[in-house]
Length: 343
Image (cartoon, rainbow, N blue to C red; front, side):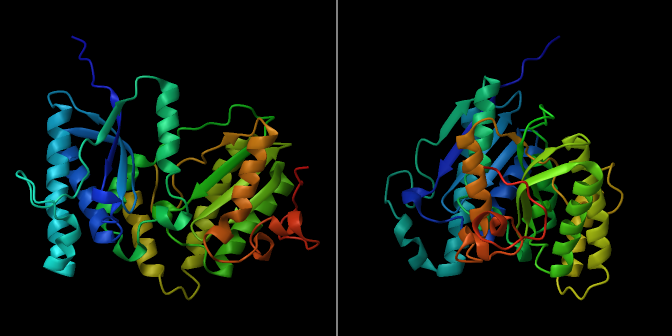
């Protein structure tokens, strides 16, 4: 007998008066634990999520035997009680004043009423919402979970969102790609680790035919605009991530890195959940390749890439950042890598 599944749904819950109730890591953990609990109970499956300071977005599926209204109500009710308890613990009774509504059915309001839930019945609509959800953070720092509070629960939950939704479909095309560390860990803060990436990219250019049109290495991720004159881009990216994973772990074990113990523990814990990874998992799955088919879209991605260090308040101007191609584009100086300029 064919059992029909409930549709995937895009769900949004907004904090009362758009208050930043989810800014603290303890508050984020309440949301993640609530999702984890309902997943383990077989009520839901989570495909993607983002926790912002004042709202959350989910792509989830309510499992057979459960009603959306009930699951949604219980999830919001439970997290509201937990968040109220956290606020009272942190700030006392005064911290609850801005949540006071004095209604018949509740004294305090944590979530705005009428949370939005939309069925994702078309593939194009799913992709649109998937992109929107993951692009929600305006700055990379907002997308990262606090490293110091990164629990085993967060680590295992991350695995549910590590799936490659994008592919290299045109090997002659030019792509915008992004590679991020597991948990958006700020791994690339030491010059030794940054140069592992640079040296490997230089090797890919020389030996594999990789063409780099623009690049920017941030503390937790790498953006590039690339094409190829040799091997397939998918193969180059796969080999690059495999090689750099080993080299970065090897480098970390030999340099005086104060965060080495908890970072390696994180990478090890994530790898423990995957049969295909032996000891450490450093990179998130996928490269999120986006084919650049128009001049407007290409310029948008080029500007976004070079503005990353400015948005993250590392430098005032893009060309001041040493670990990107901004120097090649906006100054007479040469960057670390050969770049084929996009005219």
